[in-house]
Image (cartoon, rainbow, N blue to C red; front, side):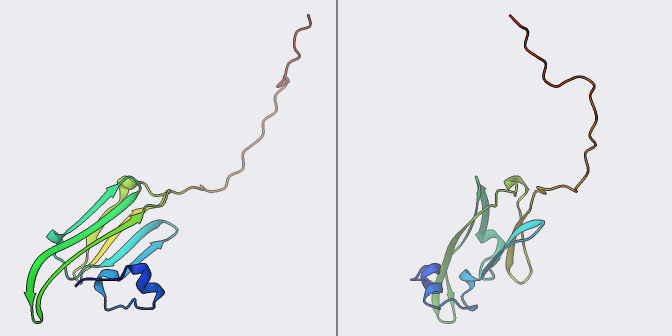
Length: 134
């Protein structure tokens, strides 16, 4: 399978279909996690690599030419996803489901904690003292 048009071109032309396994992807940013789901059912786990380079996740799949009912076919894809700033790259994990969906995800850092009231204490001395006179 060779895609002659980029994903952006296909999308703008209305050519993206659910039948193109290399282009079925869903990226979600939920309250508590970031996740990417990618249909990779035409690849075995050994033919897939997931890497984190800085703030980018790279997914690569490749298998050599093999024969199918229509002739010979080879497949390869590269996908890159920017990791959101509130996701620690060291917490990224990946898993492959039995139906060929690769999931890459990581928990989001909680930026706001629970609300609490801070008590105000009173000091008997002034915060600013007068400068000594010369």
